[in-house]
Image 1 (cartoon, one colour):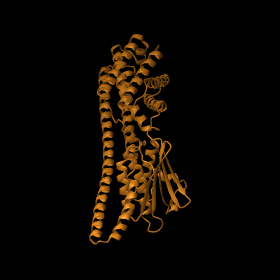
Image 2 (cartoon, rainbow, N blue to C red):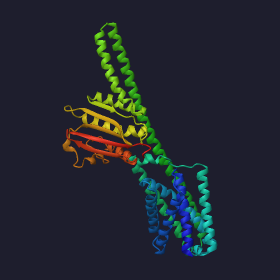
Image 3 (cartoon, helix red, strand yellow):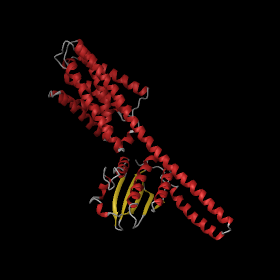
Length: 439
């Protein structure tokens, strides 16, 4: 009898809490899969409870088990799984305690005795389900969504990822302490004479945990908003600089043409217009990516390379019509590759100073290829792919995150990031970006 009601109580409790956590994060999954996770979590918890381990070990195992189940059944990444599990458990703990504590203290029974009595067990289950469904209704009705869709940004932001992991572990530690107090003074016999007061304290601590969790999520959301805003400002700044260069070039070209006409030097005028036409033809390749922000970025990078006596040749064979990356992410990954090449070549006065960028479509993906000369082959690691590891850099002023972030963004969308050396002493970066329909 105890096992049956225990399984019913915790299967429904874990499942509904997980459903609410998934809804808060704006994720969509079928309830049978969520119910399966709740059932297996309840089964593991019942097995662990049978051996009567220390409370702290039970909590650690509960977190670990649920995290593994969420990863297996839902295929979420590490951070998404952790956030969903923590949100679900933060919600489940006070609901569980509230549903059981009322019967434990009113009838002076133990946890096992409540779930062994059919009447009390069914009442506790009904109360737990009612509480959780009420919360679920509020979440759906009020459209409460913490960090919606921004999880995609968290997945590909190394610096924010480290900060968020620290916050996740702090939240987990806080939950362990709170649940230890609840279990020790509310749910487990023998019951002290001041047990009703401990129920009040435990409820207060659970409420405090919820408030701290809301502050935690708001803090993370503000951090992400700030990072996204900075990224957009950087892109707009780059586009603005590109437009300024275009305006300057346009005025300069008009002045030259006007002067040549006034001096009636038509032969030189013809040659100048022919050269200008060639430059505009090259610019046509840049302005045909299908993304205005990327157009501006490439135009600016061509001008930047020219200022460092470098040549950036851009060859756009196919427009990026429906890539799995948005404009910001495209600017980020391609900009990182170009910046890396410019920083590498600008330090050297001699040798080949040409950077080649090509974008084309191959079946259901887009291939972005960047090649630049290798001027310091002896400094490269034996495994060339290691240069994309976080922290790898040959410059003292660099944090070595550019290529690492590029690889994270590409792989998070199901693409590939390949680095190889060529026989003509060049290094080649290949980004395979899936189309949105293929992903």
